Amino acid sequence: MAGELEEVRSFVPEPENARLLRDAFGRFATGVAIVTVAGPEGPVAITVNSFSSVSLDPPLVLWSPDRRSRRFPHFEAAEHFAVHILEAGQGELCWKVVKDAYALSGLGLLPNSHGVPVIPHVLARFDCRREAVYEGGDHAIILGRVEQAELRETGDALAFFRGQVGRFLSA
Ligand SMILES: Cc1cc2nc3c(=O)[nH]c(=O)nc-3n(C[C@H](O)[C@H](O)[C@H](O)COP(=O)(O)O)c2cc1C
Image (cartoon, rainbow, N blue to C red; front, side, top):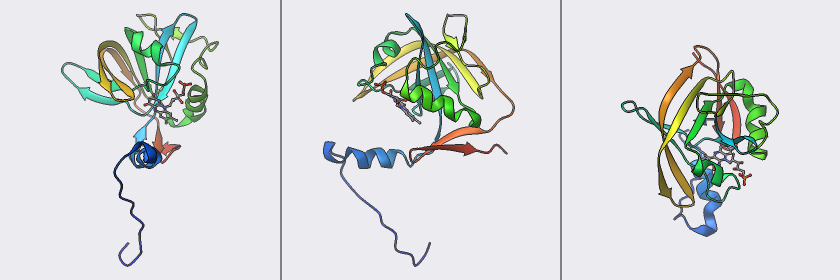
């Protein structure tokens, strides 16, 4: 607002101020997605906000797993994965998967046609085949070709902003 003193921090990203860069990235409000793959002992899942649509023709999406994550080898190796766009009421599920890669075990999730366990009642789902894995610093960039998709007509989105999840109301 005009006349108010506003603190603006300007910085050159360095390893020492990674927290600031993370906070700046966090000013980008996103949806929240859970990516699943079929692990040797059942579903392996990760909560992500790095999901992005890329191309309509061919149908491509991307997301970025952290190489330092214990779950990383599962996602890098998987030929098929499913991306679930969470609905506003799925905040608890989001945090369970943040804490535990195997949180979806025992929920009786059904597999898609490629054996990937899928979460029901989400806003949209993209069943993907891994198209490419690119270098992205401490993350990898996984490009997926959408082989099957589904969407719901109604429902509010689970949104992520400044480290917190909330409800983004649909019109
Ligand atoms: C809203 C939200 C978005 C996240 N997005 C990503 C992401 O895009 N990529 C990623 O590797 N981790 C992301 N994380 C962190 C993972 O969900 C998870 O907490 C992390 O993999 C835990 O470390 P571990 O795999 O070593 O157990 C996100 C966490 C939250 C809460």
